Amino acid sequence: DAGVTQSPTHLIKTRGQHVTLRCSPISGHKSVSWYQQVLGQGPQFIFQYYEKEERGRGNFPDRFSARQFPNYSSELNVNALLLGDSALYLCASSLGGASYEQYFGPGTRLTVT
Amino acid sequence: AQKITQTQPGMFVQEKEAVTLDCTYDTSDPSYGLFWYKQPSSGEMIFLIYQGSYDQQNATEGRYSLNFQKARKSANLVISASQLGDSAMYFCAMREWGRGGSNYKLTFGKGTLLTVNP
View 1 (spheres, helix red, strand yellow):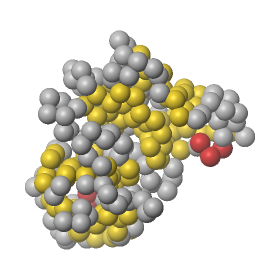
View 2 (cartoon, chains in turn green, orange):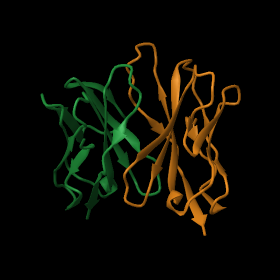
View 3 (cartoon, rainbow over the protein chains, first blue to last red):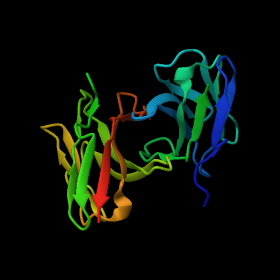
C-alpha cells in the first residue's frame, strides 16, 4: 500500500510569492494534518482536517490556509512568502476518530530567497 | 511552559549497547498519548512507539520500549542493542484528547540527535 505522498519534494520561491503544497493521505484515511519544521526544531502544528472540515489550527498567520478535497487529499497554501517560511512542511494522515497513529509523508522542503 | 521537553540535544552510544532518550511532558488533560518518532536525514518522520495515559503497562515495540512514569510526567525511550541505522533525530510528542476527544494535534519536543558509533 502507498504511504502518504507529498509534492513537490523541493521548492524554491522568492519573498512575496505564493506557494501551494499537496498531500495525498494513505488510502482509507480521512484526516490530514500539516506541520512546519524549521531547521533544528521539532514540527509545529499548522492545520488539521477531518472529513473535509477544519478541526484544528495552530498559531500561524492568515497567510497560511488549507483545504481538503472529497478524495481526502489536501493542499496547504502560503501567501506573501517570508524568509522565515523556509522549512520542511510535513503532512500526516490518520484514520481519524479514536485512531491515534499519524503517518507522515516525506515532506516538502521550501526555500524562500 | 514547554509541553514537551527533551533535555539532550545530542547523545552518543556504541553499537550493540542500550541508550535512553529523555522526555518530560506537561499537561492537565487526564487523557493523552505520548509518541516517539525517528527522523533520519531524509526528513520523513517514522512512528516508533505509543503510550496512552491510561495504559497500565509500558509500551514495547521490538528494540524500542517506553519507560512511562506518570507521576513524574516522563516518557523516556529506551533503544536496546543499538545499530548504526539508529543514528537519527528522535522526537517525543504528545496528543491531548481534550473533552471532545477530537484533538489530533501533536506537540513535539525539540528532538535529540542520536549517533551510534561502530
